[in-house]
Image (cartoon, rainbow, N blue to C red; front, side):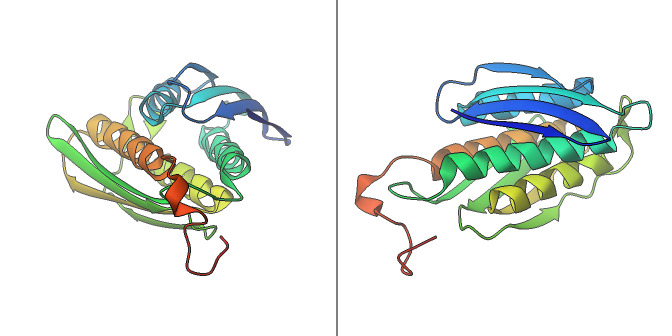
Amino acid sequence: MVQINRKTKETDIIASMELLLGGKTDIDTGVGFFDHMLEAFAKHSYMHLEIKCEGDTHVDDHHTVEDVGIVIGQLLHKALYPIESIERYGNASVVMDEACVSCDLDISNRGFLVFDMPIDGKVGQFDVELVEEFFRAVAFNASITIHLVCQRGKNRHHIIEAAFKALAVALRRATTHNKRAGIPSTKGIL
């Protein structure tokens, strides 16, 4: 299990993670829709995830969402590196009713995000522009290359939830143990 405590003037976060344990969660960020997405992410990646965040949500949800993304990325980095005996690459397409989102990722030790999801507006009180901020924070802090592409969809909730689940399933597949892989790079290091 890896743990991180991160405190700034905007947020105070205590978090822990353990990969491939079955999706047990204890999440409270103060942002209801975001908590729902993080629970789906943990469930479908089979990770144990605990997050407690006190943020300046009286200003807006931006700092909470971005800082939780930073912490999840840091937890992933601590849990994954140095890489050895895993598949490294993962992909998944997840459908939710009319929505379909694809995620392709590389546990590469090089953070990058391609975010092709034309969504705007709100889901309840949640600003959907924060979804990209979250995924960018995860990608760069975990040093993972992530491509998220909305194939189709109209309902913002469905599209966003499919994205969180697609990342979860792709991550689960990429972290699948493969003793034959050794260090899965022609460079000999990641």
